[in-house]
Amino acid sequence: MEKLLYRDSRNYVPIDVTKGIDHLTGETVMADKEAPKGYEVMPKCKNCANFKADGEQMGVCEGSMSEPKFFAYPDMVAITCDMYKEVK
Image (cartoon, rainbow, N blue to C red; front, top):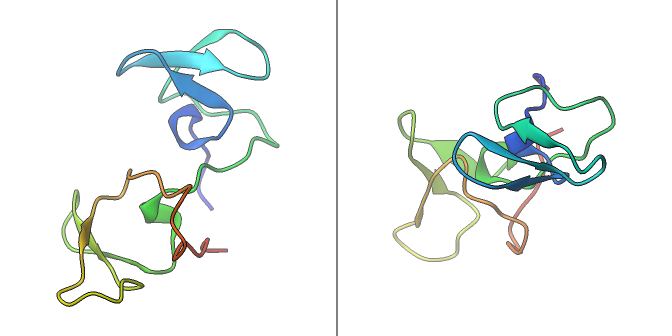
């Protein structure tokens, strides 16, 4: 897996588009800064085996039972998705 950014970790809470709070340290951090080793990956569609990209900012959930398959975007949080399967 490529480097983990704060905005893609479970240990990050956004304040606005560019910054947020690191839950473990309480510090304000930039969203696009690399998170320290050991931080947990936030379940997002881009990290799911069922996500099929269709362009840079859009995709389809292949795990969906509906027809047509529903649209998804890579940064969509999938923490409550029953079809989420993390890509290893």
